[in-house]
Image 1: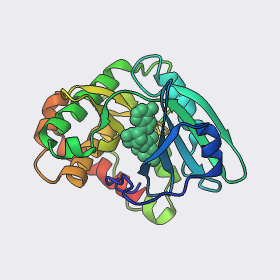
Image 2: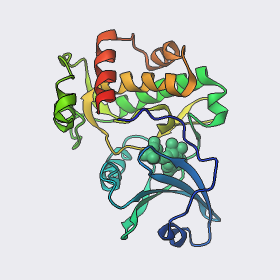
Image 3: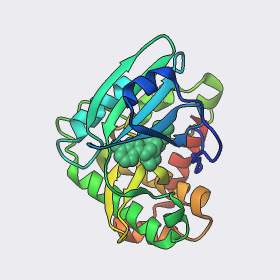
Length: 247
Ligand SMILES: Nc1ncnc2c1ncn2[C@@H]1O[C@H](COP(=O)(O)OP(=O)(O)O)[C@@H](O)[C@H]1O
Ligand SMILES: [Mg+2]
């Protein structure tokens, strides 16, 4: 998996034709570009705002169908974007969701307040893990499957898998940008759930804490772990960060 850095577009972004049609006159603002070229836009209209994730045809790593399924399931238990519509044409695929309140934890408002952002991310991850039921979750993000998807050279570098501490339904991409935070510092919701599934909670904890450094710099892990309510487990953190870097 790539290290997800803050990539809020600052220059012009070409708007796909399909998106102009979806916008139907609403104002279109680019809000995000991921490492694989996937784009997210905000559509602002009289009836409220929508977000559109758009992925060019032939980008297999970005599976919007998997994301829509997981959003529908997780939305029964925890705040996540509500899917309005999805579709595809020859140029790409899209997923439209209703806007949630709150700002991404890497919005400039929060990069200027990293300690509070790290707390919100920790509290949010705890709330997610507490809310989603492992029994009855139809998705997995287990180590075995993740290792099986690696190329053979990477697979040889994985090392010994630590025993499971606690199985939870993990976010799957718990990097800072995927937490939405209210202006008073409380966690609001999670986005970007295409990898959500059952796994050891350290699979999420290791990467969420890892991403603090990429987005805010050093020194914010204690606030994160304190807000989650757990002592860092060095061995499991090292294993799951290494696995993330290999992916
Ligand atoms: N329904 C939504 N409500 C509010 N913000 C959203 C919504 N959907 C996406 N976003 C914003 O757009 C950004 C990109 O969406 P995300 O699903 O994380 O895409 P990517 O897979 O490219 O990271 C998020 O970090 C968040 O700030
Ligand atoms: Mg994201």
